[in-house]
Amino acid sequence: MGHILLIPFPVQGHVNPMMHLAWKLVSDGFLITFLNTDFNHHRIIQANTKNSIHNNCDRIRLISIPDGLPPEDKRNNLPKLFQALQNSMAPPVIHKLIQDINDREEDHNKITAMIADIWTCFGLQAVADLCQISFAAFHPSFVSNCAIRYFGRRLVSLGLLYPDGAPKEDKKVKYLESMPPLHCGDLPWLYGGEYIFEKGIRMGEEIKQIKWVLFNSVYELEAPVVDELSKELGGIAYPIGPLIDFEFLQSDARQTAETKILPSFWTDEVDCLEWLDKQRLQSVIYVSFGSLAVWSERQVKELALALDAIQRPFLWVVRSDLMDGSEAVLPQGFLERIRDRGCIVSWAPQLRVLSHPSIACFVTHCGWNSLQESITMGVPMLCSPYFADQFLNRTYIVDVWKVGLPLDTNRDGIIENWRLTEAVERLLVGEEGVDIRKRVIKLMEICRNTVKEGGLAYRNYYRFIEGMKKQLI
Ligand code: UDP
Image 1 (cartoon, rainbow, N blue to C red):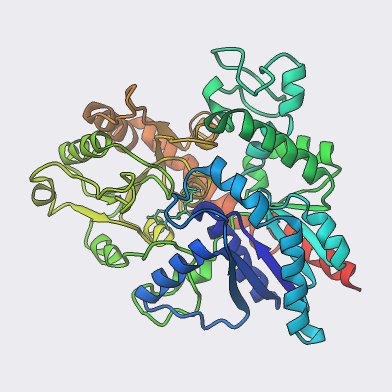
Image 2: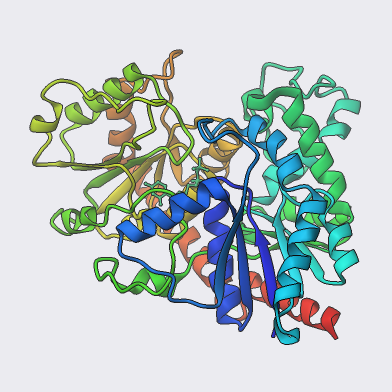
């Protein structure tokens, strides 16, 4: 029916939703070529092999190219990664890649479309035109994150920002009519300074030329912003999320004959699901800070002490690279003390964890995927953002949707004992928590319904599929 080249930005939070999109497209009859960087490709293959998962699906072909960084470099410095990709994934490289694939393929299997992450799509509309194939950009997070960047230049001319994107006011500001007032620290480019601010503005200019921009978001969660951006762009913002494969979730992770290759860069420690099976209903605090956060030894130790003091069961993801190169150091005696009520893993099957009935709440860094997964599984959140769009996401979780509470750190980024205790008590014991849980269940239903037949995300997705097919005729 068609062969689509998918190009994610090479970090976990972008590869995951793109892979879920790949599964969806395969179930609609498409053949997929999924382009990773060599660095991530090896990690994905290794992680799947360790979990005894093999790519039995011949409809998703994994290929890879270099990312342009030396092998010893860290891949979580996003500005550096952006810069390297400008050459390694430049339009002529992608053009040649498509030609090479097409040279090998029979007529009925030649590439007919390309979907590229919003951060790797620069100049690719022209490549698609040259190859006479359809093209769409894919935004892995919500429309608000895109809109605030899109309008960046206008906010400078309105005098709300300095030309380099720095906020003028040290207080809450209503930057856009369709968005809630934002704290100055909510602006998603601040971690990368002027370079990332400019990049966002260029991304805005780029998507004006693109017919379809698909968002891994839910219209009902941010309708005014979707409407404002769509008006500006001429009706092209299509929320098609949440991109979560519910059928996959129902399969048993502990049976090794998985048919779907997983996009994880780390090996899922599925044993934690057995541990969860033994816990009481809605009793466990799930703690994870995503794939990119780097913490100091003190931050890790203080959180360990806080989890120790709280006297509730917890499942904590401590990535092997959480502490920038060295193994995380936990306080002396900690593991023995928490043996009966704590489980520590280096990577969790997060979707399965969040959908487990033992989970009570999620202490999260507010990465977009994590928060959308949490809402879709009906789990309330305690929010401790780390960088990028995560502060903006927290504002939506806490102030707009009211499905979580802030979990602030001190000046050194430390979640102290008393802060965690207070936040957990407010969420799991107090009246406030009851209302928060009711709201998250309501949003869960909205998120699940929108992707069902007749729902808005469902209709947006098929409008795109139909449009692509028409373009092929
Ligand atoms: N994730 C996971 N296991 C973990 C931690 C994270 O599978 O132990 C997944 C999570 O489900 C999400 C992604 O990794 O899909 C992280 O993306 P997110 O946008 O939340 O944060 P980022 O890693 O980009 O900061």
